[in-house]
Image (cartoon, rainbow, N blue to C red; front, side, top):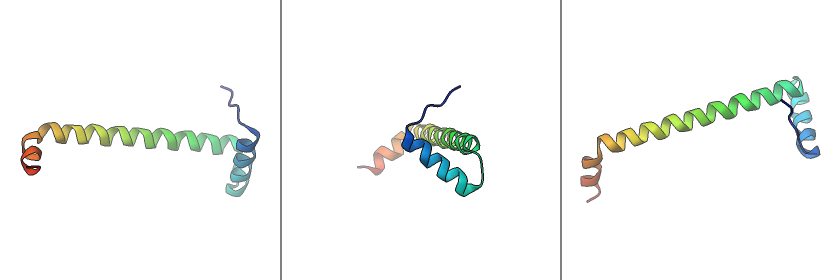
Length: 65
């Protein structure tokens, strides 16, 4: 895989990696892992909320009245 960044993105990544004392590659890999973890969490929360709403639809409707 090749990651193409704008000059500004590359400069920001380089600066952040230097501040963290890691390589640009490691900084990018961390960002990808964080993005995936955050997205997975959001999906799990959405599924749980849908389950709760489906399971307790009648009670939620009555509370709204």
